[in-house]
View 1 (cartoon, rainbow, N blue to C red):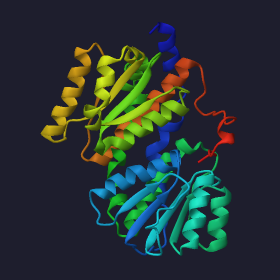
View 2 (cartoon, rainbow, N blue to C red; view 1 turned 30 degrees about the vertical axis):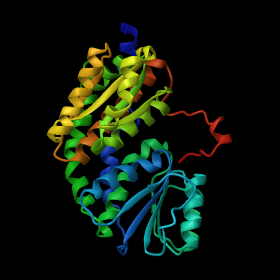
View 3 (cartoon, one colour; view 1 turned 90 degrees about the vertical axis):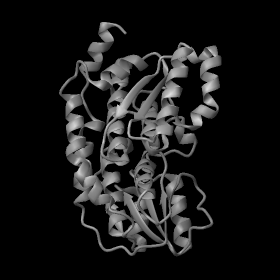
View 4 (cartoon, helix red, strand yellow; view 1 turned 180 degrees about the horizontal axis):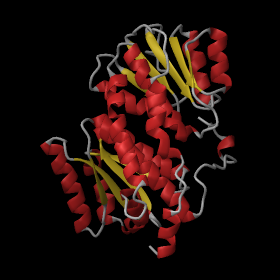
Length: 339
């Protein structure tokens, strides 16, 4: 990587990731009315608006007896009924998939809570008397993840599902500190190093299942902010199939694996991660490993997400593209709207 690319990365104006901890803190303070606990929870959203659901449902799965599912399509599962709390989440409020799921949930008599900034989802909530949580307007959906995370965590705790608001609030100092460490060292921070390593390659981000949400977010942010192809996967699934392609397909030279490691995992999973890295290196593939540190899976997920967000913006700067703009001319023919 030449010096000019490094210079462009260091001159970046930090946008989306910089205020995520502050977004979370603001959302956690949002007043909520008492919402009754239901036996099941269905979170409806796609793209960036589904990300908060993925993160918080993973947290709740380890601490709650209420099953939680994230639906990212247009068909509502048959098990969703009047005993299900449906959280409809769309930043812009006009995502076709989310509106379709809302309408079906309404017809089944579900309790629906809407998280949005505007649009058709807000109109439906006001018209039908559903609890409505409004986010600030003027952001990109992926740039509003902190708000969506905080609101989802507050809802879960208010509904008696788990102590997610308490947990997330306790992590804010750590998240701010990690964010500040990246902004404060523009020459040698981890995000710069990873972006330089990735530039000119196709990144594939791997993680253990407890950090699955972070790997997905990395892929999405590199897709959208950096305008690059990227993929994600999980361990140990990698060890059962993808490892063959990495070691035996010459096309793998065009790709670079990024491994989000968890040193607090079980001995078996540590062994699998180390085996993955060792096999790749012995085949001439040089993965980049990031060892996430934190007191909980949620903290490690969010630390990794903040890092990946900065990586995607550095990559955008290196490519000479502005991460806040998206050309929707192709997406308009499909299902995507600002989600």
